[in-house]
Image (spheres, rainbow, N blue to C red):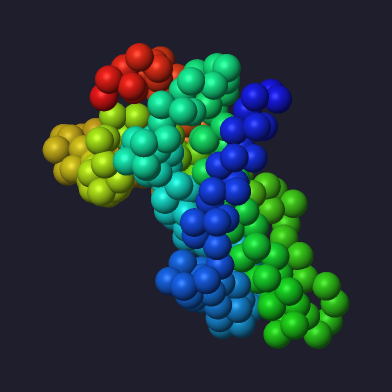
Length: 244
């Protein structure tokens, strides 16, 4: 744990120094903060606290924010010729990879937590005339879990790609293609399956209440995160990275 924490400290300092809150990234962050943290609560009011579509938006934002640092995780180190120095340290393979992974996940998740907190303040300012407005406990759990697991999914895919990508640019292109495949693949699979299979499945999904459906999405994300992190850990080998 101490080695993972050391890697996370190193990655956090580089992440803040490289991206910070200025320039283009700061403008983009403020834009999403304004849209999802101020405008959306103002328009939708109390219903903003129960909108499943917000979970999708939070998951996408957390994933996109978490994916950005993972592109630099190893491909960036390789470009800057600092990868050999990192691998020469007494840090274990697992601590290096997990330190980079957790840093990216917390970065993406932290962005969403800020948006959610600002949104709570906004909805109370605009619509809380009769008392404090807050999440239903179970939906609050979904609001915290879905972005966290989505950030884990994107970060795991990004690190898996960055392990072998020779440059940051190629890592970014491969990550973009992978995300498109992840988003489009379910649609293609559903289109290719026989109607006799698809119809009952869609009817079953439509019959589920919102909380049960979200629970299944959370379970699926948890399984995917575990499989991808395990695959990345098995692929991470110092000798291969140096020779790549």
